[in-house]
Image (cartoon, rainbow, N blue to C red; front, side, top):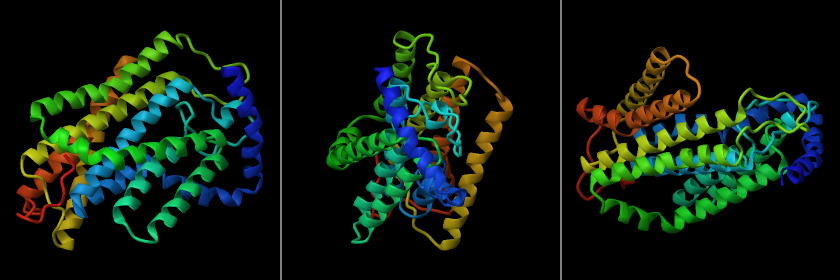
Length: 337
């Protein structure tokens, strides 16, 4: 199987090399396009939506992002795919990555997130715009040397399938979730957030124990690709756990409205992002380095704390500071949980 995949990727290297041969002038716009599918961008913009625009929409999009990213991380561990610049040293590494390659996480995320937003916004122009963004992100990931054509096609397919499932079943799933007590919700969230990490670790231990890069991978490789992939999955699991628990607890307390004056919305965002930065700094100072299992635990806890702050602690602080209110009776800002 791996020999077949390596042969296919060797053929697709020429597509990446051809794109890069178009010139270095494309690098800045391609980096900008790639950022449209980056989790880093989403983690800056989604708090803005949740805290300052529409709490229900922001919460749902964040859950879609975390779920898609977790599935993508698990698939990366199973496929254990190369990246073009790992396979061939003549490919320029314009977007270095430490996890396995297939399927493309940027492409999958942009389909799931921008597709969900397009479905909810329901404007005539939004789907063509979202489609253009998806195409640009897929193209940029190949130009930057981060993915093969099959990687981005797989990302598009998985993202589209996940988007369909969410749009088809989200209301049924939310009704089922709301019937559970808060304690049961916390337990289910913990189990669901740890399952992808357990499956990834089990796969690496039982199926790919002692994995080493094939001899055909002659490019520059990160030090510990399986370990980085596992830590990535654990970090995302923590983000999902913190978000689901935070949103469930916030819903039990009466939810939160993102309405308000421009000044209050701007203040919320500044205070909220400052809290996230503070959490990152404190964890970095307290546990500056870790390896092995400790590194995975550190990432899980870090993302759990950041998500709990964003979905529960920060909104409750805004309410106490008078920067926000609970939804008015008869005018709820649709809670996600």
